[in-house]
Amino acid sequence: MTDATPRTDVDYAKHLTQEQLEQGAHRRRAGGLWRKMGKLQLKFLTAHGLEPGHRLLDVGCGPLRAGVRLAEYLDAGNYYGIDINESLLDVGYDVELPDEVRAKLPRENLRATDRFDCDFGVTFDFAIGQSLFTHISLNQIRLCLFRVAAHTKVGGRFYATFFEAEAATALDDVLEAKQGIYAERNPYWYWPDDLEWAAGFSPWRFRYIGDWGHPRNQMIVEFKRRPDSRRALLPFTRRR
Image (cartoon, rainbow, N blue to C red; front, side, top):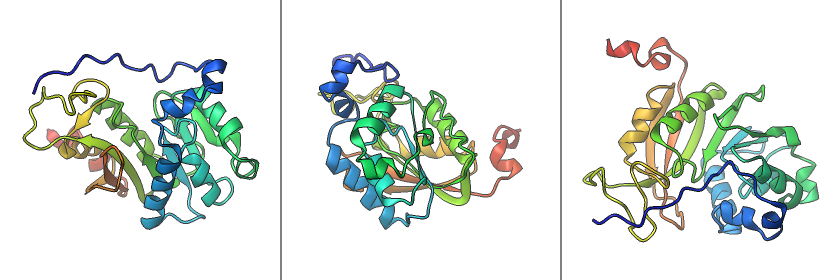
């Protein structure tokens, strides 16, 4: 397979200008498919046990493409979101949320962070990272899983999507050459074993789910929170 044209990575932390926001650039930054992806995430999560009384963390929530529907479904105050870009959180909260949904979602439940800081003083029953792992490195995935685990209840679940490469894919192959999905730069592809490895540094039990109807063929996996243990929290110790 030949390399695709090199892609200039998006600076996801860079604030969008007021003009860009007025032109709807925040929806494009979130990947478009605004209504379709919001509905799909809500449908998936409720099919996997999400109830209104649960607390949910949306990791990489952006301008609340899913948040609009999830905050509407959940009881007041039970939706939380983190994202690297404060301007996306602002436009999501101020523009995209209907008044009745905004009344259920305190602004302080949304936080800009570049290191997955999700210490809101609560523990979560569910978390989702939709098209998050497609844009971050494997070590960032490892950090994300570690920090989310610290604030997830035992038995809680974190669902994440990713571009999957077949087992025989060479490390330097570029998937979908027209778009370019890489092993070493954004947008990233992974093997399921990569994600299982990253989960091994935190108290998660990894489970591959696969196809969930994503329009761009992203697969989905589940991380289920296990009880804390020395073995789970000190991964290097067990290799000695």
